[in-house]
Image 1 (cartoon, rainbow, N blue to C red):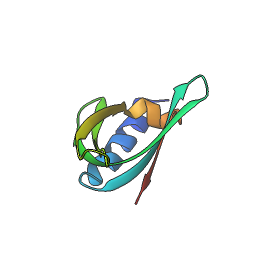
Image 2 (spheres, helix red, strand yellow; image 1 turned 90 degrees about the vertical axis):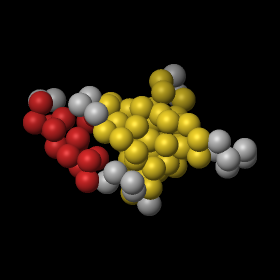
Image 3 (cartoon, rainbow, N blue to C red; image 1 turned 180 degrees about the vertical axis):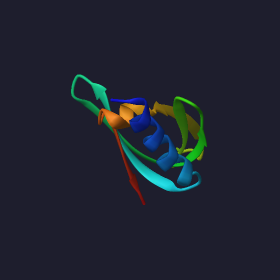
Amino acid sequence: MSQSDIKKVKSSVDKNIGSKVKIRANRGRHKIDVTEGIIRETYSSIFLVEVINKLDDSTQKISFSYTDVLTNDVQMQLI
């Protein structure tokens, strides 16, 4: 995993700000979260996804790192 790989992932996420994504996150010990949200902000080492709770219409921002995407702990798919 090199710095250029991280920059490629960051630029790909930057291009899709405002897009709806489906995220499959491996949380360890056979726990996998699948959520849908919108990419809101990107920073130097993390990006934020806004998730809307359909039960009570509340929103939550979840952060993910670009290295999680490179190591396949987080998988994203555009909707």
